[in-house]
Length: 314
Image (cartoon, rainbow, N blue to C red; front, side, top):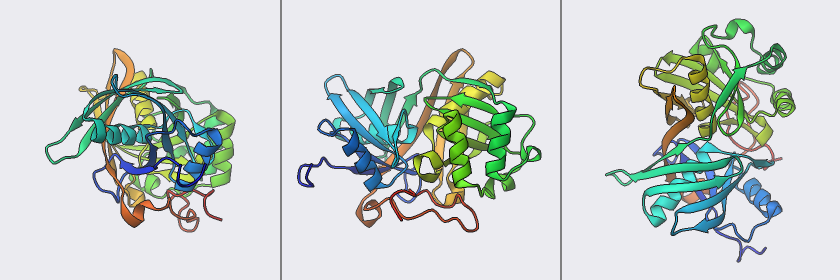
């Protein structure tokens, strides 16, 4: 496909209203002519952790089929790219309900316009689940993270949680431990490939309704995500299984602050429903900042300081 006929790739950043914050995603609203190789090549060229592709659309029914690609491979589901796509569509066809058919199933969304003009999207996840992580899973992950069992919060035991993808949930006892994340990229990627995890959801609980999170994503060719909607849904399911939800069922995740890309994810879960609602805003990235996904991850003084793709830079 030539450059002249290639569909437009939009660039949005999700879970923020600041183009310099949140988690960037590529969005292709008309990918009907793209095959798998073309979608993968586009995602690699964009260089963000994921790009969403709308491969079929029924605008009258507000129903769309989505696929997601990282720079290295197809991903079954991506929360921040889902929010970005929902906001991009709402800006073009108007706010209201949307339905996305994804590889993990149907995702219902609500979009609404704020008085200031920004758009908020709320996705309802597929059914979540969570199980205790095995000693083998935990020990291999801690080794790659350069952490120990003593770094963990005993009140929040390690689990493998699902909210569209599987994520290992590890809760640390201090904010300082989370801030000092410096992991072995290749070793953690191998552990995650072995167990089929998409990211690690590394969290610190500041209060019952406030968590701080960091999400390594080496299997996608990215050191770290600044905001991870699928992992937020998984965390809601994890807390539901543990009986650890706040009385309202709602909590906030602050993510990306250690990367200089602060993000806010609002999560609503219920003891009577295994689905979880994740809300956030998104804003278009324009100009020079939208031209590329960035450079090679910085490995000195903290492996997880860059959100950019290893694949797109030599």
